[in-house]
Image (cartoon, rainbow, N blue to C red):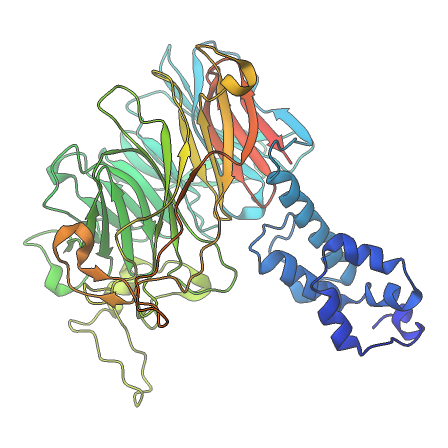
Length: 548
């Protein structure tokens, strides 16, 4: 304890009891308590108190903390912990207000070409929350400009750029693992993996090719050393590649019951030995551990769905994110935001929030998790995969491995409805969605009448905080795939009533409106919750950065 505590008057109650009481107070009450007497002034400067307050008010409530980075909490002083707690709660209060007001608005890209527009916009996961990746398309002549922006500067600037003008362009995916040297993958006439030299003097030399795969394919996900693509022809199978060995796919995920165009992939969640694939009209669960029993006649092993669910309607847009938790092991509840399509040339005017519930008795595989929660390479799982998984025995000291099977599913494939949210779109209106890992859902729609009056133009940037779900609400009885599109999964019964647990469902609108405009110039949105940033791409190639 510091000198302030050593020279403070005695307390009327034991310190441990007082700390427990103060930990339940709002932050403003703690600061007010500091001004009452010398004893409480000393108590409210204790590091042990601020460590407790930071955990109670920030970490346990899964609130993002600006400027925390990778610094261990044990290395932070009482002043640092107090400052972090104050910043986190202030940002959350501003972020979740009905009309959040940014403290700073910056334009990153001054348009110089009239036919340019932003077609990709996403913050680079991890890496100090300071990098933004964008792709600007110019129509005449058709060119694509890939850029990386440094947001830590007072005036953000482009630190890396790559211009693509020859051949086709098939999209960009960012690596979700910040420790990987492969920062992103881009599809052109071939698939290219790039690293980024963030400190390069010449931005045009900052992107460096690490590996390539010949041929044209769809890019869907890059996680650590695993790349997920989809074949455009030959059945449209999803292919999993291991970056250290790109001579051939390591695994194919194939659903023979689907026909094009129903097999288009909307979103993917990849874990240590399973994958959840959301297509146009289905949700599928696969194992990603290659086993000899799944070998095809030639080429890579093939995995078929262990369980699947079919939507009644075709989806137009899907965003997927696993619920954030500081210490809870995977699998955790997965939030889905879905906008369904219609028979008309525009999607429906409603967003649907669904939840995929985890199986609490799902047995994860021994060393399959990898260190630090990283996704292991497919090569490593293939090397460690025996023909028949060894049984788990309490008398054995050797590592045991349990694989995802139809009898050991990580999730119920049936999505459970949580909210329906009104989000109207005009004919050919611009729509976009993003879902942050701390529960921020943002979307673009055309609901501007309440603010701007009736009009044929106008956009709204709206949002809603996803309420964290009790992870005890989950399925436990897992059967073999069966009828009804549910994979034969049965829900757990509650001990008290014997009834099937339910997730509360209601209809509502947006709880936050971040902005609106009288034209339809916004094309893409991205959010970085830890730093309190929102990025908006424009039809003229500009990027607006909102900092909260």
